[in-house]
Length: 234
Ligand SMILES: Nc1ccn([C@@H]2O[C@H](COP(=O)(O)OP(=O)(O)OP(=O)(O)O)[C@@H](O)[C@H]2O)c(=O)n1
Ligand SMILES: C[C@](O)(CO)[C@H](O)COP(=O)(O)O
Image 1 (cartoon, helix red, strand yellow):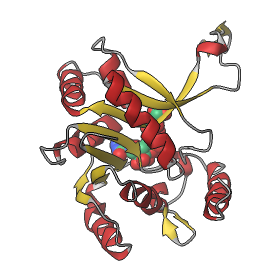
Image 2: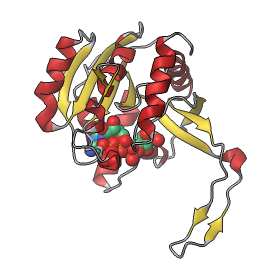
Image 3: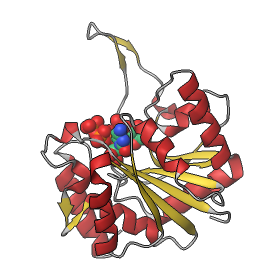
């Protein structure tokens, strides 16, 4: 990462698919909330200038206290998110310092991303203008109709499972979010609002361990990977 980079860590979701009373980003692993693991990883990146954390409106004070308790550096602001992930992202971008010219957006519930993968994503973004971390899919993916019948089977060689961080020149991402808002478009990731403008977005190959903690089955796998990483076993 050469230029002035900021990251928006989004953690304002309800975690409904996890089925826990506590939102999944606050579930603890190795004595720390998942979102703290994620923030600590980005705070340790030498070339990262600042972090904005986006959380539920009622959780701003709680997360500010976590940032202080765990001594997490580079946190410029903790701000309230919105009803959709895309709204939370936009709120986060607005809180970055004006000097930040490149933005990463990262899911707060992806605590296992590596510094190397983040660096690769940013390098590709600086070259292309926009990039997302991804891995080639391992399973055959099929499109299935409402009737449960298979519609098509895309060539697996062209299919990638998209992750975060997703990295962009800041003015591009702001413009894309504002256009999506004006046109009532909601995407499931940040690249979608840029792609729909016809702007190229590149893929940077990441790791299969960069999982998004979403459903209960993800928790033991994340615990295992976190422990493995803590032992320096990658
Ligand atoms: N309005 C929202 C929705 C999601 N997120 C964040 O976006 C990331 C990816 O979203 P997802 O895994 O879907 O989290 P949730 O929306 O909380 O999960 P669910 O869909 O199961 O409720 C998470 O870190 C989540 O906290 C957010 O900041 N604001
Ligand atoms: C952004 C993302 O993590 C890329 O795979 C994914 O689209 C988030 O989806 P979610 O339903 O908000 O978890």
